[in-house]
Image 1: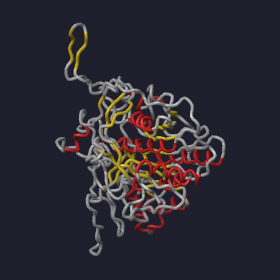
Image 2 (image 1 turned 60 degrees about the vertical axis):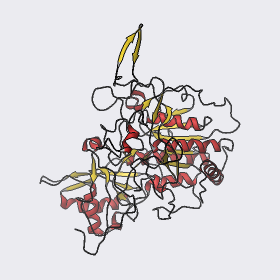
Image 3 (image 1 turned 90 degrees about the vertical axis):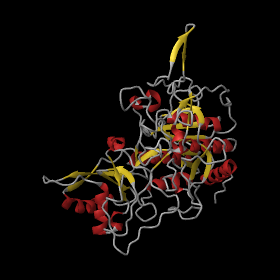
Image 4 (image 1 turned 120 degrees about the vertical axis):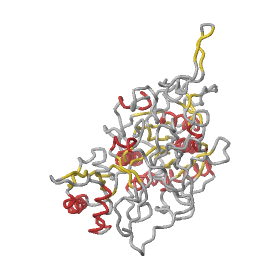
Length: 514
């Protein structure tokens, strides 16, 4: 119970919590909602809602794993639970950064409540103090920054799908309706972006962590999928679960294209339109309907950081990455105090120090509540959880503009932590050539020719319209890459790369990072 002398910190204007998820939307990864109204509380810890893997905690590689395990077990025992370390992730076992998973299980024959990461974390803080579990946290669920294909069917769990779920008449919901910015086919009749056959310097490299990238004539010679760290895959590599190849992988057997299928291909097309000369690395960490487990995202980011380190060190297997575009995020339950685990930021900071500019979507929940990793950006009011470092590039958070290029999209998150805004509503880009299970409203024949209204999920044109800050971030990434394209060299030191990236960012946005 909250003590009489404790006061919950005042919310800033427009800092509103998104709608909670439907349980079925997160059940596949044992997801749970942290509801401050019912969650176990201790003095000094005032959580906000978040979504996490219920029977799991994670331990940063930056702290003593065995020591943390001992403390957690001491508290778990009287609750009737045990704490079982999962196998160390081979993807990060030999890397500087990473998270270790521990699973919470029932350890006795007596009835007990279901093991829960938040409960154990809070009980441990209460008994041993906050410092005893420094570096231990929840395994959050991370979602992509896009407006859903069907806002009145697919829910909005603390992610960026449709902030107006439950009220289809709300103005924000219009962005998810085909014809008003929602995912729909479109006929592109212009020429493809022009890409030189030869290039005088090293081409700029933009990396994307998303649903992968499907086949498309604009992208087949531009996008590399499946780049590895040595022999280790980065992200998911099972060809049977590729959202941008198969389209309908989950849900009812109705052929309807999954909410995020085509997402990575759409993003790659935006980068290519903004900078045709750029090479694109596309890795798959996002399932066709979300969400992403934080530990999987962190593992992929740690591998990417090692690729870049090897490149700058001249080691075998290194790859240059000039811009990393991330169209995903989550809301942390305690983002402004010592409970905030900095593991993800530490990786992004390492990339930034080596000269890779990290660009993140701000999110689509029409709130000023900070979404991470976008909110790792320097805050305009100076009150962010991370203070800018002189020897690092800043994280860049990107909100979405309407097609007029003047007004912010209603769905876009906003606040002092959003760096800049670029078009992200009703943008046109590449799509896998899906033909989904929906049917045109009307169809007939005349003069031996088929006639119909527009088929809402027939993407055989290879192009579509979509909305979301998911698409603002890669558009900015491509614009930055364009300004880098004539100034790159394989032998540049990180300080040179940082200076070059700052100048390119300023030219692309008029934002001058310090």
